[in-house]
Length: 40
Image 1: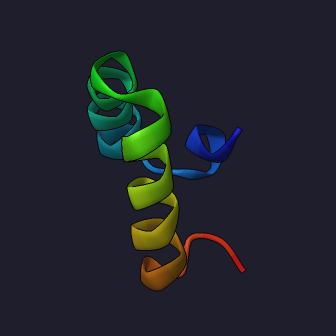
Image 2 (image 1 turned 135 degrees about the vertical axis):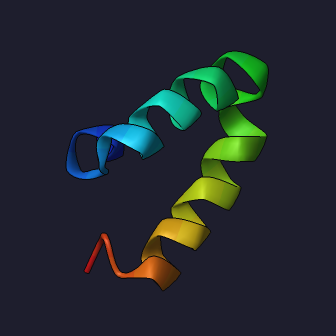
């Protein structure tokens, strides 16, 4: 999963976000992650 490549802080944040909204936040997180440069 994408979380593995993210820092610990992101992991903690994502865990709460995923519990909140998996699909919606998943798309937003993917966009932000791509922009940040975590994923190529």
